[in-house]
Length: 277
Image 1 (cartoon, rainbow, N blue to C red):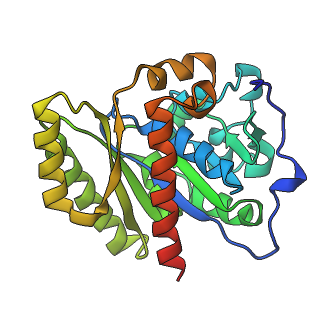
Image 2 (image 1 turned 120 degrees about the horizontal axis):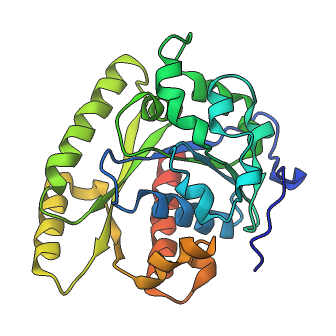
């Protein structure tokens, strides 16, 4: 499938008037845990089952945009301009090569947004307002957060209904996620009472490694059914896919990594259906 992109999403992305998308923030303050890979491939899997999906690339590194094959000249209007009120989501949106999947790309200027937002009115609610204005376009909005707990991530959590946490199975995993859970609880108390953890997905799992099994057991014991049954394995095809500007589901559909993300999407949809019931 071609990685060619278009400047705006097609009209088919519109849903019934008054519809409201579910907004999921893909977040972990630690880098290198598979956060962007999870955002891109989960979004692709949801789009594959006819869900209209938008990824908001809120990470100044722009890895989600790169992973979807969005070239630099298609990022001139980006999440920075949305946060600063210079563009709405529709103006910044780019359709990807994946049917039903669009992205608001990141740009280099987003790196300065943390400082610029400090003196802006409603600084923590800028993204929520932008998502609300484009609500009729999508079934799901996935926000790829930066690896920090600053103002950009705060905007994502205020805009989101739930947080999905990718967690690498490593020795310090529980320590890091405990801090994240405490921060989410503070946001619930002060800015977004409805915010919840949709689930925790274990990433980069190597079943041959006894440490992986031990950490997985500890995480499941601590968080119970908040942890998805599906785990994302260490898989070379998952690692290679971004350099080709494609989700692994397009790069190698039969790979273990691609199949894992399909299974994860199934679990996410089941939990979303339970929320809607």
